[in-house]
Image (cartoon, rainbow, N blue to C red; front, top):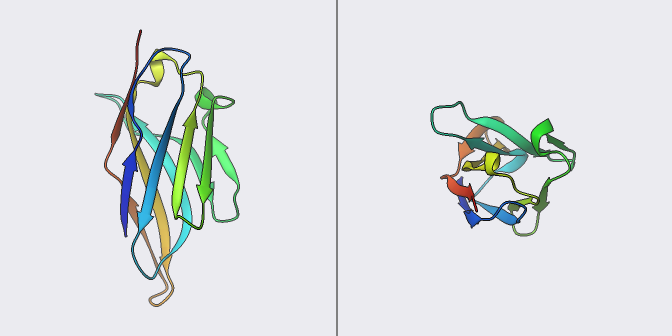
Length: 120
């Protein structure tokens, strides 16, 4: 299973960005996908997640501003980020937990990070 994250960049406070995470591979079912972010010197933080049934969850700091969604046909998960603040500046990572029908096991994979910088 491979994850390709994209969409980061420089944006002014109050602006918007949409991150994408394309999940590819064979013989897996997606159990859950999460978006994490990490600021230099701090622990990686889960900020949004979506599970197989479509339920979503957010950390308080992004509630009402960020939206996680999933395109099942494209195996792509998005993070729409609105009303961005300087404190949202971080490297953002997608993470997927999958099940493997043939083996009955589950695995977890990370995408490469994409840098989001919110600055005027």
